[in-house]
Amino acid sequence: MTLTDFNKSYEEIIHSNISGNRKAIRLADLLTAMEHTFKIPMLRNDHWEQQNKAIISLYRKISISRNL
Image (cartoon, rainbow, N blue to C red; front, side):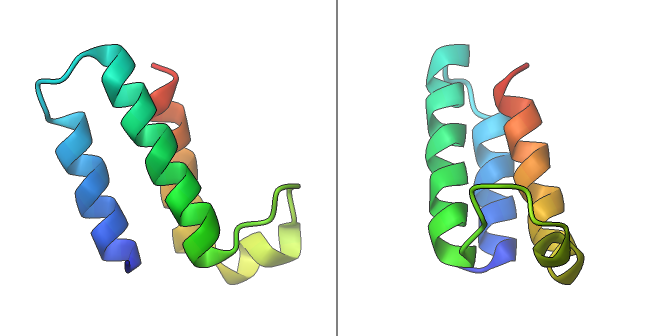
């Protein structure tokens, strides 16, 4: 999947009519998929984040949405 695909999946989940708990689960699954696809470090890594601003931006957006 590309970053565009992940963003599209995010939008579909957010705008769907599924329950809040189910959305949270699907968003968590999306985060896990991003971690594997883009090899996002488990611990914060400023150098990696500088090199991958668009990826980490979407990742944080999804993460915050999951907690709302």
